Image 1 (cartoon, rainbow, N blue to C red):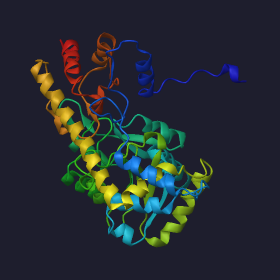
Image 2: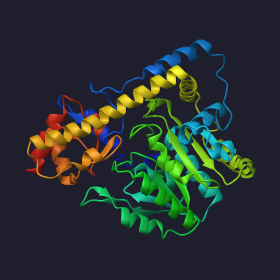
Image 3: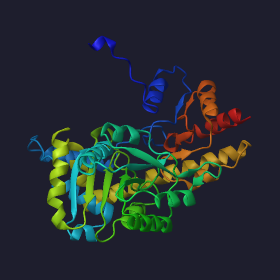
Image 4: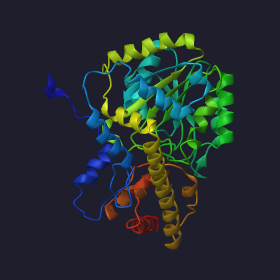
Length: 397
């Protein structure tokens, strides 16, 4: 029976990483995969993480199962991180939640939850969005449509088209929004635009689902929660999928969380039971180690201070490389205006490169970029940014 199974197509991004590993050229550069790298091209182990691991190892007493929804102290502290410790949704005790295997795990639990409990709802995704979003919701059996987000001619947010489209989404549908550092464009709404989005979402009776994977990587830990907090008004409903791969460097530990904010505390037990039901049929209960680290760091005054400093270092390096790339492109006389790259936020940037140009850069210069022209800015370093600019200039003619 198994001999007739055909090979699945390579993932658009992970497939590029596989091709990169197989490329024998020593000068190769990988700007495709979404992993933070320091100025030496390495993914660092944060000091605060190392210190927390050492302390946790010394105090370890058991490796027994966690509850289905994970460690309650973890979900509590990450909700405080996202919303603020005294936020009305927290003090009103109207949040159901679960610790999940990464942000992708949170999205899948959210998808299964929606499929089981809101079977007539469609999820609306930004165009473009993270390429794995459609995979996750298709696997959960949730129908999808899209709303405009990116204006290609101006390399900016398609604001008027976006807000007009949201205002036409049917009542009761779900709108997926990127909390900050939009992947793949790097373009975020302003604080004022977030308020307008929240107004329209509330007026239309939509259920927001925030993919919140990069808190701290745009403008700051507090600043990056502006969109979430604009949506989370008294009595408002929303789903939040958090990830700690990037801002804690815990990629392989798979640390995420799903928080479902409901209108009142009375609705929490039923929603929590449905979350638990989905998890039990999927992975039963989550891995513990990564969440223990995040919980420990966020509850330690000294380690939290270290973490905030390390996140700022990563954020500043990314923003610095944005500026360096634009400077090098200008110095090389590359045709086009690239100032928009410095206005984008987070690890990713839509460069404006065409698919043909991307293929030429890979074949001729051993530089790997996603077909859409999206690059991982964190893959740029002081030693390779000039060569990347030269390669872009070469394919641009």
